[in-house]
Structure formats: C-alpha cells, structure tokens
Image 1 (cartoon, rainbow, N blue to C red):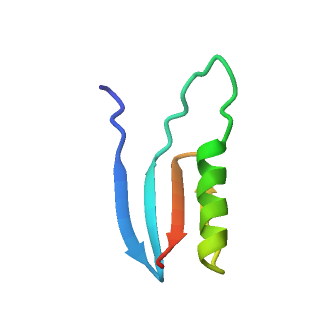
Image 2: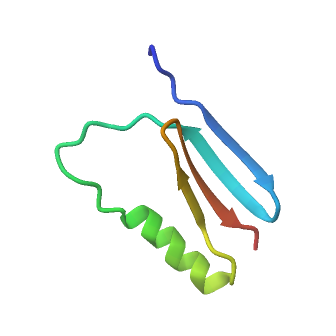
Length: 67
C-alpha cells in the first residue's frame, strides 16, 4: 500500500504501450520469461515491426505495433 503500482496505457507512433513503475518482486525462482517471448513471437509473425521492451531503474514498458 505504501508503493502503489502505477500503470499507463497509450498509443504513440504506431505502437500501443503499457508501462508501469518498476517494483521488482522477491521471487524464490527465476521467471521463465515465457509471457514476453510469446508476445514477441506472435508479433514477429504478424508484423515486420519489432516489440520494444524497455527497463530502467524506475520503469518497465512494453510497446507492441498497431496492426
């Protein structure tokens, strides 16, 4: 409750994006990354534009091309 997740969804330059403030989870094991890999492979099949994943110290974002 002291650090709420802030999510922003928008459209810019032919991409739909979702970004949020970075709040890393403390996990017992590593993430498999299947979710992001699945998005990348599906858009690779549908569009010549790439999926853009950005991570900084404070923010995480995923941008997918408009189809």
